[in-house]
Length: 256
Image (cartoon, rainbow, N blue to C red; front, side):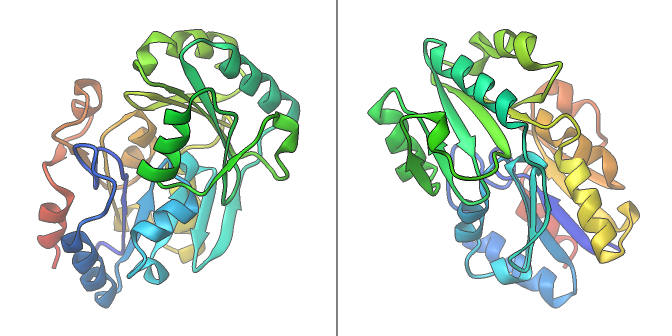
């Protein structure tokens, strides 16, 4: 019997660039809660962003944030993985110096930007709707860093190999969207984060379902007994799993 359901956000629960969870999804999460099934948002996004997206049901949920670097449940930190400060600084400087690339530095509740363009600030504040702080130097960041991301408006495929060749042996690098490459500690991923949550709740992977569409979902999809890959996923991801879904809401309604 399914007791916990984890879903990726962008490209999975949020499709076609949508930035807001549907009313239908919120209603389904309420019904799942009534049946003692915990819904988990598992995303590269920050905690405040995710919480706002689910505000009507957030108190009944758990959150795997920043690609697994942070796990929140009932507004408590269950797990957090901070990056080495010196290595994080080096990565940030390398991203900043790369033409066409912007850096996103993630703390527990804040995204720190050292922006090159106003359009990047506008995207993160008004489209992605993160809690954002603008800094002029890496040294102005007052907290642990749990994830560093590269944003390349022309597509991360232009620079992914460049960054992974420099830092891929020290940090885990994962493409999380057409324009994004995320770096976290080597042992961090959504699957490991979900495993922490399962242990805390005394649940097993046999009682878990997950939805995803991209490389940062692989470990989570492989951990659970019911790993659903989206029809719009890249072929390499799609071919690894037998369970498929065109819309998360449609699949979840079959549980109710």
